[in-house]
Image 1 (cartoon, rainbow, N blue to C red):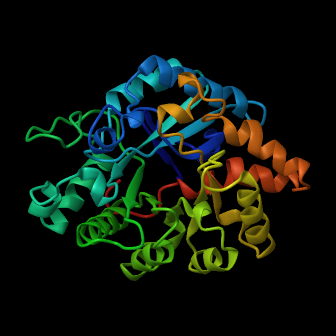
Image 2 (cartoon, one colour):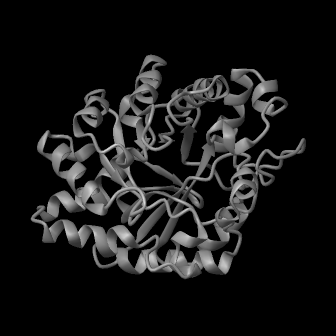
Image 3 (cartoon, helix red, strand yellow):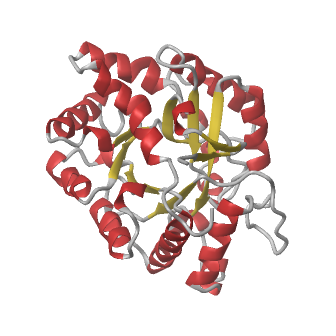
Length: 330
């Protein structure tokens, strides 16, 4: 039976509603916050408010919505706070991540447990997050206490223009965990770089390409290049909405149009990646987590896209992608 693993348990994929495929409701500290305090998202009440905006906008399309919270291991993840947000917002489901961010987020990595453990030991920790329950302490100390809340997506991330040795090691561990459990992989690329290299690496390691989504690729608005990834069978995740300092949203429209015309419309996922206080309405921004159902999807209709195409982007593609594949441990 097909299922998506949410923070409260396994659900039928058809129950997800509108899916925000990459976002951040809670981040309680760690490297990103050290580098930039704007990344601190530790207020449950604010997260409830932000998630409520998303659900309300989603209900203009379907019954509710799901946020894929992409804060991974040892990166400020708090599964207990996420579970509280989930319990307080009607119509919301949350999928929690395991896996890794890019190396620089972990600051000085020479003595990090990624460097000290073997690839198989690292993979075992990711698998345990998925099949047993996420560590209450986010793998930040020697004591591990499993919660009842299991991870339903694995994150991998790479640096700008390269995949470091440390990141290659996490990539191998992520691949093992994905093959063992069937859990989908959702990645971070730095400004869209190394996207094709990520996809090829996972395919070479034997991961089902239909369970790999390469993220932040809207930052490289080159339809031909992106089509080389979809040709492999992987998905593309377009986020960074209303991020005018990088690209106007017309660029995102162009990517959707170009890839849909090439026949890859069902391999596209949308997210907002509102991972800073300055990107969320609850903290005073004019746009937030609700951008895709509230602004971007209506714009696509206004620009002549068929409603079925828009519903694929908002709902249907993610229902397919976030289903678990085959795995020995589930």
